[in-house]
Length: 228
Image 1 (spheres, one colour):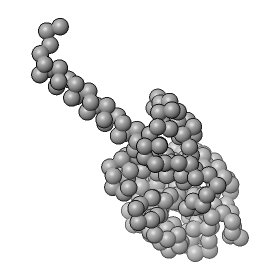
Image 2: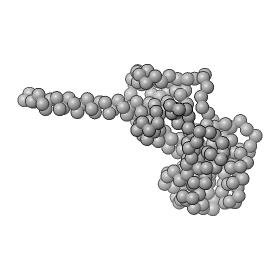
Image 3: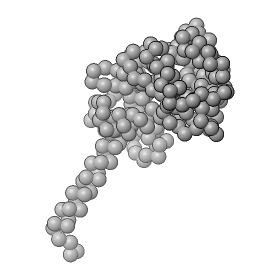
Image 4: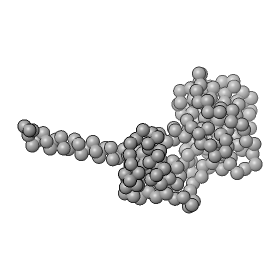
């Protein structure tokens, strides 16, 4: 074919490098979904998540990758919860109602808490996003789930970075960190904020925050091996 051995081996090396990068990227995405779903998803559900994201992959391939990485579904076993909705605090209506568009800054803020798996244990990340530009305007990372170190800490950062606007909708899940008196009284003290909470067990009511965590874990945390 008129192709020299040097050119062939160079092409072969590039092909191997490309394949290696694809494998590494798939591993990172599988790992991100696995930990984001609290280690409860096995290969069938992780495959479905990947297909929803436009990644063409078979269940057998996902199962092989999970086996190589030592990832197994832990359904029925204890996992780190980030939402404790079994409390007596007041629950707000879902005012946002999945309207994830905002025409101006500080019209809608959404917040959520996720956990990050590390060799030393778990860390909890709380974020507040402005739906106007989808920027993270407040965040907090902690090794505990107290209001002061999660929702309240992220709130204090958010109001430093972005000015409040009358009628601001603040949406979150119905976890105790958001429903408790300490956090509720803080927001109510401004007298210009409308509270909104997701319906019970409905993560799609806070889809933007969920998507942010999924991307963060896939591309930055597990993808760049910042925390493994």
